[in-house]
Structure formats: C-alpha cells, structure tokens
Length: 292
Image (cartoon, rainbow, N blue to C red; front, top):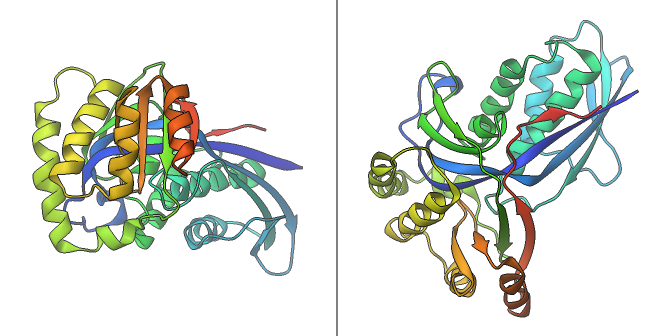
C-alpha cells in the first residue's frame, strides 16, 4: 500500500525574523503571505526491514530537511522499517515558493498515513517539519501557513500556542515567475544586519494593516517592503515592470522571483519572451492533506 499527500506552496510577501526563541517551536518569523495551488506531492510505501531508513524512489533526491524530519518521526516506530519516498515538486527550490517546507510536510503526512504513529495529528507533524526547517534555516514560517492554507499574517512567530497566525480566504488567480539564478534563504537569514533591515521595513506595514489581509494588500505592502529592505534584484525589477503593465506584482521572499495578479496571459507572453520561467496558479485555501 502507498500513501500520498499534498502540501501547497507558499509565497511570503513581507517578513522579518525576530531573535530566535529558546526552542524551535518558539522560533519563526512575523510577516504575511499566501498559499498557492502549486506545491509538493509525496508518496510513501513502507516495508519491514532490519535497519530503519529512507529510500528515494525514481528521480527523487533526498533533501536534508526531509531526512531530518522523517528521521525524527521514525524514532517512534516500534520496529525497523524502510520508507520508500517519491516526491513531485511543481515549482523550483530556492526561489521562495516554500518548496522545502512543502516537500517536508507532505512527506511527513504521507509517512504517517502509512504508519499512523501520531494518528494524523497535524500539530505533531507540523512541529517536526518546522523544527527541521529552523535547523537548516530553509524557512521560518512556511509550514505554519501551509498547515492552514489561504492568506496568512503571522502575528507572533513560532508554533501555536506561542505563535499566532491570522488566516483569510480568497478566490484569486496569480502568476509566479522566476529567474534562472536562485536566492538561497540561509544566506539572508544568517546575516544579522539583514535581520535588522528586514524588521525596519516590515513592521510598519504589519502595524498599518486594517481588517483582514487580501491579495491586493499583499502585493502593495510586499512591493514597498521589498524596496525598503533593499532586496530587489535587476531580474526582479524587470519582471515587476513587465507584470505591472498588465496588473500588479511584487517580489517573492526570499527569491529571485515575483507573483502577480491581473492580465496573466499578457504577463506570461512578455515574461517568456525575456527568458523568464513562469506558472499560472491560484490561491490555495486548503492546507496540507492526505490524498490516499
């Protein structure tokens, strides 16, 4: 038997990482973003074995974040097993689309679908995924949002109950586009000067938000944040210029990438002619889930 799970991708529009908490559960980021319908699919098949291990299937490459999270989960298994893992990523890693968190979370949900060690307890699986992301500095809030879906504002960093996330639902189509050169999250998250710059740029927009967040606010506040934080690359500026001629756009954090709303077909045609990659998708209002 094989269990399959899906986790949506996640776009962060604006954020800053406060000082780390005493535990991974109290560490994270404040900010806002949205889940998108493109994400990661994981399939897991389990067999009894002499030694516990994780075996990649097909073209799957074992990511260290995934290995850490699944390894922690498997420590509770009563007997040794081999977990055969297949992954299908619908967007690139390293461009701010939450693929590290998506593949990790989907893998955990699929593995628990096979073994049932936490009986589908999403909070327990979220804690494992978040701890692995924090350990490798690959994300400080993606999986918290990916557990719920929709548009999110991370009011307090970390996992509930110390962390708090405000969620809103919206039906909307979006385009995501990226350059060939990725931006690695860790290089920014480990820079103390960047942390201070991100906080100064982010906090005023979070504090000025009125009512519930929506896509228009994410694009407007996100673009102001990206410029104030000094994160806009030449490629991002060109992509946003193209998209803004047909709607509105902003940079994806932390990536050499953008997201946009408006006349997506016109945007796609011009982005493609400039050599940028792109996909059309929509806001995903459901979070990570077991498919079968």
